[in-house]
Amino acid sequence: MKLEQHEKKYIHDGHAVYSCQYHIVFCPKYRRPVLTSGVDIRLKQLFVSLQEEMKYQLIECEVMPDHVHLLISIPPTECVTDVIARIKGKTSHIIREEFPSLVSRLPTLWTRGKFVSTCGAVSLETVMRYIEGQKGV
Figure: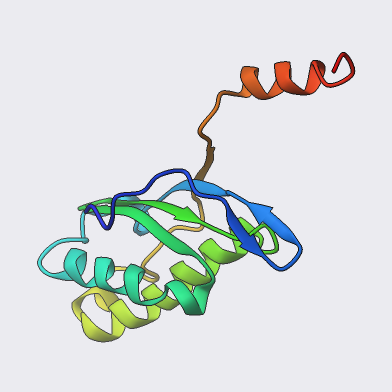
C-alpha cells in the first residue's frame, strides 16, 4: 500500500532535528494466515488512523495473510518497542472486536515477537567515514 511519495525528510521538533525510520514486521499468533477477508483492509485503515495517537508517521504498509510490514517514522523521544506495543495492542483490541471469529481461533491476535530495523539514506560505512574524518577537518 503506497501511502504517499516519501523522500528523506528531517523533522524539526522543539530542540531536535531528526529522521528516524523503522521497518517493522510482526505476525499473528502461531503465524496463522488470518489477515484476510477484510481484516487486511481494516488493519491498513487502522494503521493510518492511529498515527497521531500512537506518535508515528506511516510511510508504507502491507498486510500479508500471516504478517504485517510497516515503514514508520518515530520521534527520537519515543521508544520504538513501546510504539510497536501500542500499535499491536490497539489493533488487536479493535480487530478482535470487529471480527469475532478471530477470538475463537486465537488467544491473542499478535505474537509477542517483532522484527525491527532502522532505515537510512546513507550506509553505515558512510556515517563511520564521516565521523572518523571529523578530527581532520
